[in-house]
Image (cartoon, rainbow, N blue to C red):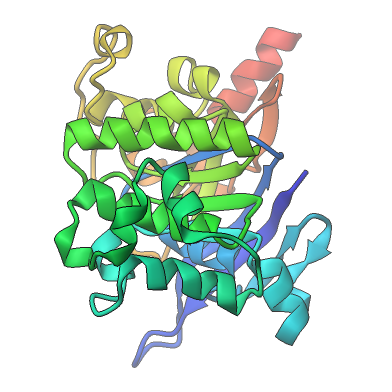
Length: 318
């Protein structure tokens, strides 16, 4: 186990209100070395907040983040910096994450200098499929795909064990997206990296993930092997996601029935009682409106937070 989040919660104050906005509410996840954990869910479900907490850009309100057995939330100063460099983030917009006044080579060399690491810029560029000549260019002289490759090279300069990729390919053209995805798969396999891959695109998540976690209103409602989560979902929300999101995979598309998710996402500052999905769930029962379901292992290595699924699993096992 290289990375573990335990009961992560993150609240943001709302001006003029006593109730905070609960961006995350008790999220627990694990990542093994060399594994890719895909994170999916609608906008506003807490995916990006989770990413910022994992890399230390923000502190959790509750819970802990452990890297290689060390609780990062209890560290500060030099000890925190030494561990944080092993978890790097690749952002959605490569242009916004690069200094437009800084040449590519300087941006990468700066990471090596800050972390007092040995390495050569041209070697890092070669790892992401760019020639040494790109070190002299500015971000505006590069295409979107090239800029994202530079962002990946800069993240690799810190010699991380884990990359958190927050919608890292969603801003790219389809053909370029496929190239960068193949690059990420190659780097993961060659370097033994662990990925937390956040995306709204199920086809991308399916392509790269070992396991998938589904988030709704700041909580994980399902997590398990990618094929089981996408082909045999436990939670009604997961099933609704795969029916409404574009799926270019012919095998999935042939089984897809486009049924929109009913209702609106509840206000995170005033979440509904019981299961947070029950106001939109076609299978909701009285217990769903009264009691929040725990995240339980309902199948082998396949967890779901759903009263209906739990009852069905118990009936099958009996």
